[in-house]
Each structure stands twice: as C-alpha cells, then as structure tokens.
Length: 601
Image 1 (cartoon, rainbow, N blue to C red):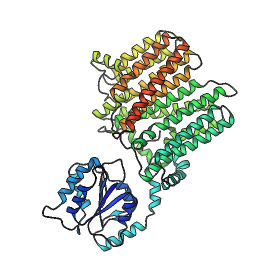
Image 2 (cartoon, helix red, strand yellow; image 1 turned 120 degrees about the vertical axis):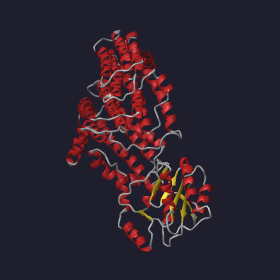
Image 3 (cartoon, rainbow, N blue to C red; image 1 turned 135 degrees about the horizontal axis):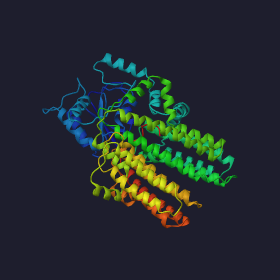
Image 4 (cartoon, rainbow, N blue to C red; image 1 turned 45 degrees about the horizontal axis):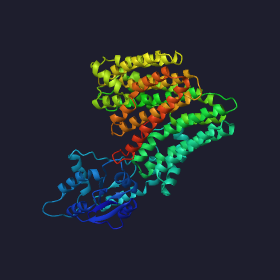
C-alpha cells in the first residue's frame, strides 16, 4: 500500500488526510524532518511513498495528478512530492540532506516537501511536475493566504476540470465533436464502478470482432449491424484512454493493449468485409483490396513513426515549412481541416462504418484506398519539404531508432559487413526506393512461377543492406523504413495475386498482418524507451529482406496451391513467434507504463 507522510503541524478543519486516504494512501504523521526521515526508512521498499505538507490547500485532483501517476518515478506539486520504488533512494538522500544533524525542528516556517523537491532538482533528478491549469495546489504562509487559497479551491469546478483533462488535447474533428462530448461521461461511469481501462479496451476489441463477424455474413442487415458496432467499438476505444487519464490508471499491460488493439480491430474488420463480399449475392472477391488497404494504412503509420523518431530530439530543428504550418495554426478552421485531411482513426472508422451500412464492401475499400492515398500524399509531401528545408543535426538515438524500424535481418547484416561503406546523402532513400520498386515490379509484372521475382529480391537484399550501412542521419533517411515496409508487403500482395487460386490472398493477408504486428510492436517499444525487440527475434523471422526473398523463392518453386499453403504456414509461424515474445515483454515488470498521447492514428 502507498504511504503518505504528512509533515508539519496539523491544520484544524483540513481535509488533507481524508483526501490522501481516498487516493489509496496509508497516512502517517511526522512533526518534523527527522521523524519524516524515520517513517520514510520504515516504509516498505516496494511501495510508493509521498511527503505532503500538513498545510497543503488544494484540489484532490491536484494531489491525484502529482502523487498517483504510475508513469513517473518522481513527481511533485506544490507542497507534495512522491517517489516510486525505483526512485526511493533519491528521495531518501534528499530528505536526509534536509534533516538537521542536531535533531529535528518543527516545520512551522517552510515546507519540507518543497525543500526536498529543490534538493532533487539540484541532484539532477527528473521530477515530473504536472500542469494543473485552474486547479489549486499551495502551502499558504499565513491565515489570510490560507483563506484566499480555500476560496480559490471553491471557485473551481474540480470535476469539470477532471472530465476535460480526460480528453486528449489533440484529437481529430470527428472524435472531438461527435465522440468525446459523451464518451468522457462514460469513462467517469466506468471509473465509479471500478472498471479498468484494460477491461474497456478488451470490450472495444470484442465489439469490433463482432462487427467483423456481422460484416462477414454478407447480408444487408449484417452490414448495417457491422457499421453500428464499429462506431460503438470506437466509442469504447476513446473511453479506455479517457478512463486512464480520468483515474490515472496507466499500466504496462494497458500500454500493450492500447498500442496493438486498434490495428487488430481495423484489420479484422477488413477481413470481415472481404469475407462478406465473397458470401454476398454478388460473390465479389475483394481480398486484394482488403490487403491493399492494410498495406497502405500500415505504410502510412510507418511514415508517421519514422519522421517523428528522426526529428523529436534533433537540434536546430526549424524550417520555413514548419514556420508556415505554425502560422496556419493561428487560423482556427485550418487546424481542423488539416486534421481531417490526414484521415485519422475517427474519420476513417466513421467513413468505413457509414459506407459498410449503405453500400458494398468494394465501394468501401475503394473509398478507403483513395482517402488513405490522398492523406499519405499530403502528409509525406509536407514532411519531405520540412526535411529538405530544415537544418537539423540528428542524434545517435534517432539513427538507432530508424535502424530498428528498418528491421534488417541476417542477410542484410552479412552484405553490410562485406560492403562496409555506406551511401552518401540522398542516395540512401533513393537506393532503398529503387530496390523495393524492383522487387515489387518483378513480382507484379510476371506470372506465377517466374524466377524474375527472385532476382528482384536478391537486388533488394543488396540495396537494402547498402541503405542501412551507415547511421541513418540524412535529411530523408526517415523514408527508408516505410520504403522497406512497402517493398515487403507489396511483394507479398503481388505474388499472392499472381497465384490466382482461392485462399492465396487471404493467406497473404494473414502473413502481412503478422509481420505488421511485429513492426507496430517495435514502434511502441521504441516510443516507451524500452529499445527494439531482441536481436534473436529479428533473426528468427528473417528480417524484411529475408522474408521477401523467401516468399519469392516459394512462389518460384511451388505450384499456386502449394504456395498458398506455404504462405499460411509462414503466417502462423511468424505470428506465434512475435506474439509470444510481445506478450512476454508487455506483461513483464520491465515494460514502460505509458499510454498513447500522440497524434491520432
């Protein structure tokens, strides 16, 4: 159980102790710094410990933000500081430094918690200090200041602030105006009944899977039900994050669920639409469109991830293009237009739901492909312009992240060791693009069984190795991972389409889904500062160039039916390996407790 050590002389009429207990703290009282140090040493080493000034006046939610957020080892608000087990030693040192050697003295003048925070800052410790906005957190120095602080507390609707802060500060138009106005109240309803974000996330997944099952029936009633359930799943998807922010219930498992379930839901729904089209009256085969939509959407995300990782800590990171974008932010309506153009998850799912209910799967996929292609063109062009016009020095961390996102395997490593020297400047993304284009073109323009795709894949192995032979610090080197993703996924799509037998494209869909999961897992590990997946995992599933070469060899040597079976076996094998390792990592104690607060996906 967490322990809160309240230091100093108690204040008559204060609700501080009750507020701390309601937040899950076992309250201990310390009259002076020496007694606080003793209580700190006696607290269980595996528990969170907080120091709170007895004179604290403020909102309970200010204390919640400062003392209960699991994402930060050290956190503080005025008059209170907390440490999780991994930061206890730093807190203990700071308290010891503030304890008089000649014995304790009463804390009647200043705040031990405030002095400890100052000591932690002086030690170079990273102390999280949440933005409180209109919330009050203070340690008044005299009765008049205390009265004014209490009046300030009474003047703020704490619950309204808490509900507002539960919603992402940056979200899409559809989510902001059509979902969040009521989903935040659903989040509060869940919090008051003890539901966890993970339970809501699981409910969202199950709802989406039921929606996919309804779409798979191929009936108009099934399509209508699928559209309604997809929107319901999205409401729950928004609610889980809002519940996490409302109750500050972040967890390692929640980070994994939130990071992966959105993609699982969307791609399962694509498969449901494809099955429904085949079972419907027209017996329409849209598996190629479903796989194409998944490939395009995944590559869009890789562009986002790579660009952000390449630039989030770059120095001198300015450009005329970015300055122009900042100017547009001052014109309110342009912000929403630009957020809608990129077709974030809210707009995308709303479009899919409406088109599913009102039209056919083929029309739905056509609209999705066109919309995602336009969005990808807009975002990628803007980022290319920013990269070419900014003068930025990228860090070793950024280069390492891009190398991990590239997902090179043993073949690429072997060629790289032989080649040794890398490519200059813009030649890096150019070679990565040309190599990927070569293998995709060879696969798409030849018949099943042709050896030409194998030759293209060998060229791809060479070019991909050359592209990552040196640290990826060039202006456009962030394009290398998305070029690799497009090459690998596009090759699988083209070869499965050329097989022209029942089951080939669904098998290819399963393989790309399994590999895409591995790539998303890599992204969210990097985002959580936990590093890339272990090297043995990347080697065991071949790396992007090894898988691409293997699929082309299988297509050249096997009959179309045998190739379909091989794709299915490969999909199952990759899925098992990456899922087992991913689950092991995300439920382990070493995984970061995070929740996605980035741009809408």
